[in-house]
Image (tube, rainbow, N blue to C red; front, side, top):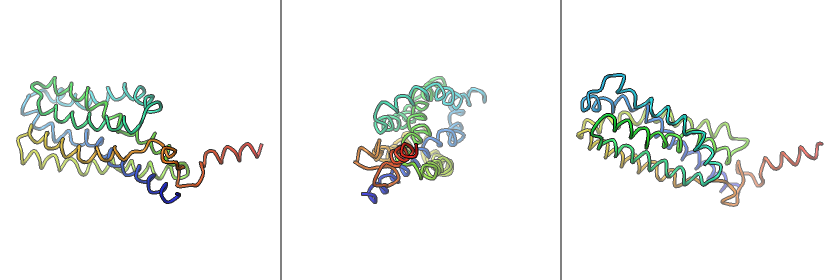
Length: 217
């Protein structure tokens, strides 16, 4: 059982790594996407960069609300919803007729995804699966942020070089969904859902610590 718990626990780390890489892509690849958007809609440079500002502001507003939902509802389902929102956002982006619609896409679809599969969700998930190894697990998952900044911008640039930008966004959305939906589908809300305990142990380390604390008193 300990080996099974260990494997499933680190699977949560791998899923979080992939999802955080996808979230990091939103900002790290926007400079690449902004080129065809500027050519298509010809906004001022300040307006062009508003998309990232919209994501940041809406994410800040939604984080406490969605964070509360993560404590009450299935984290796996919320993360799956986030993957669908993110993929749908890039599909919707390909159909934007004005730059105002681009901003709406980033605010309504991409910003909520930024919270639902971002650092808040990953921290909640891994805090449930790890106690003694929590720092290591979260650290490995957070490394996905850097990996996303390395992997996705060249991929998007290659797609933009190979296709018209709207078609490139649709192809990218499909590739993105093929990566992140399975990652979210592998999420298990709690070790107890599998009859397991954090850190691959045979018992709950937090419960053991509480019992030892009571015994010491």
